[in-house]
Image (cartoon, rainbow, N blue to C red; front, side, top):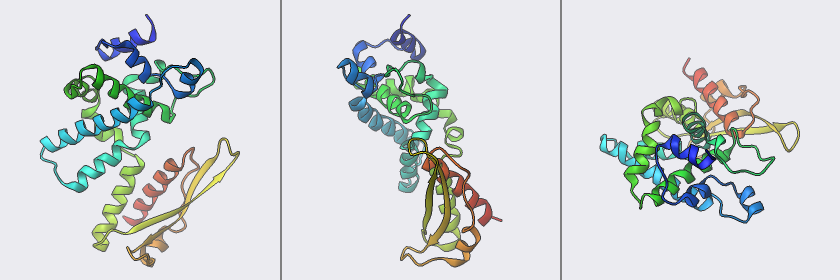
Length: 238
């Protein structure tokens, strides 16, 4: 059984157009070597399909606040969220067509391919969005809150919500990002956090409490910011 057959068995869906599925699972680097199509166009389509399914699910539950729906879109745009789904629910790294030395596990490619698979399924099913919902989204939808727990988007939103409750306006949060190590594999640290009014006036009573904080060394800028936001919230809530 080849990769395509195994992945279709995992999905419990047989593609009418197998080439469409292979395209969704093919990285640009591998495609350039073989002169075939890659996932990029399907990724864009899948991104829109995923967002529409999620927004409609929430809307049907009575969640129509623009702020909450915007926050949901932000969470869906977070690569770390999609990487987690791709790895834990679909084991996508086992089915991707990649270049020989290309690293897939934990990379943004997983997020891109996950979106591309959704796009391919949407097209293959004759644009039947309910099939994408049933085959893909429903596999992890009930676990959504635990999936996004600890994401940088969620941590920043929690921090902003806390500050809004104290300030009665939405502040601006700024941090400095510094890197250490080699250029091809830097380690990032977020530090020197500041909190400003919308007019960019420093809010000293909050900033002085968190200015000395710094994140743990992290592999990505997002992870460094995530850790710092979490630390800031813990200090400010004391």
